[in-house]
Amino acid sequence: MAIYTELHRPQFHFSAKKNWINDPNGLVYRDGIWHLFFQHNRLAPVWGEMSWGHAVSDDLLHWRELEIALEPDDMGDMFSGSAVVDEHNTAGFGAGALLAFYTAAGFADKPTASLKRVPNGAHTQCLAYSVDSGKQWTKFSDNPLVAEMSKGNRDPKVVWHEASQRWVMALYLSEDEYCLLTSPDAKSWELRQRFRFSGESECPDFFPLRDQAGQEHWVFWAAGGHYQLGRFDGEAFVPESPVLLGEFGPNGYAAQTWSDAPNDRRIQISWMAGGLYPEMPFNQQMSLPVELSLTGEGEDARLVRQPVREIEALRLRSVHPDSVAVTPSASFVVPTNAKLLDVSFTVEKGTAAVFYLVIRGQSMVFDFRDGRLRFRPSDVPKVKPTPEYVELPNEEHLDVRLIVDLTSVEIFIQGGRMSASFCFLPGAYVNTLVANAYGGDLRLRDIAVHELASAWRREAGR
Image: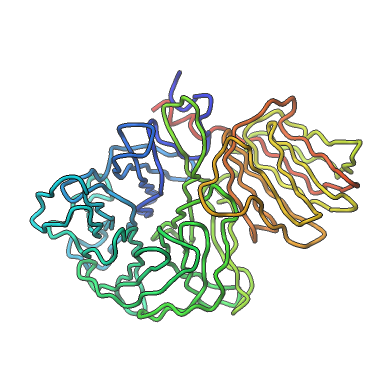
């Protein structure tokens, strides 16, 4: 079977040509190209030896996989990290050089030949750079930059802080502890702050956004999808909000945002962890990229996640059914047979106790009795300690948008104030989408159904 046309191949979510992928790494935009690096076991379709795979796109949808960017060395496997554009030549590799920061996960079962004599099993933070816009990478000769601070510390996220004119590194330490370090040259790092982020571990992200009043907030995000808003002066992060949930789904994990994106866009992508792809040559997929913004202002500011506008370029056929009443005795069959969909509608709850939306044979349950949404196909594992449900907003009208690929559903509620990522495999079905009501009537209005094209068509021909 031709590559990208396999039975369970996601058609507009990134997956490697073959073998295992997990965390997105090194997300950076340069010269019109979005670079996506990712944890990759090039040897097998299961987790194992970690390299940095590499793919590029000019629109966040059509990805072209390149050669491995960073391979394991005598300091260890290439664990997760980040990348930036060094516009000011702070590191001395040239203005505009790309800098990649990664964790070298030291081998625990064999000695190292490194002149740094990294202890067996140590996790240290290292640097690689590219002077040709990411085509080739060279590891810094004086690695590691940061020695092991805590057993298993990892996942450096580096960002430029304009006000203090220096780099900031957010680093996971252990349990629920993280830290911030700073550097003037991306090579020598000084510890500034250690703090705990309750209920989280791994894969920090750290970036600024402005609220609707124009006030800057810094967002600290962690692997499980929790975030906190705060102030940052180049020395310390001071929380302004409680710890909040930004990714409500059981399969959205290790999200990261692109650095140096144009027009101050803050674009995020996640590993959709836990998906199943039976007997496929590849394993695992990324989420659809989403654009982040803040709604509200001051202490009431909250994060909003919405699908990137680029998804509209994949639309083929669109239908806009009239508003329709859904009752226990009258289901609504959405007029499409397509498997790739961008669907939006508003639910007027009415007297219904439950709204069922059956997606390719799998039921998404909006239970208005307890205010919960459930979509847990029994064969798809949950990969993080989220509840078995998503709490729905206590509002009479729900604005819903669904992005449906062959093996995933992403839902955005109330304009992206709540969002969740789900992996699934289809069940038996006759119609692609069917709406049902239980315990009373409801109404669907403002219905828009957009059938989508595969993003792999042009890539398969290259």
